[in-house]
Length: 64
Image (cartoon, rainbow, N blue to C red; front, side, top):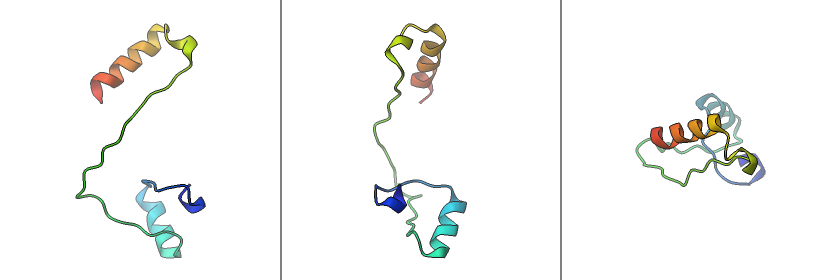
């Protein structure tokens, strides 16, 4: 997506290293910053009563 001018991305270090070396990308170290953004989970409406899925969703909410 980055290469198609559709935004920015967090990528594996290996990919960043290879692409910056090739001159395709510019990387910025953000390790000292604090990133926050809304995080959502989506699933089909017919699954909203699936007990196993709901257990997983509850685990995500408690663990995130």
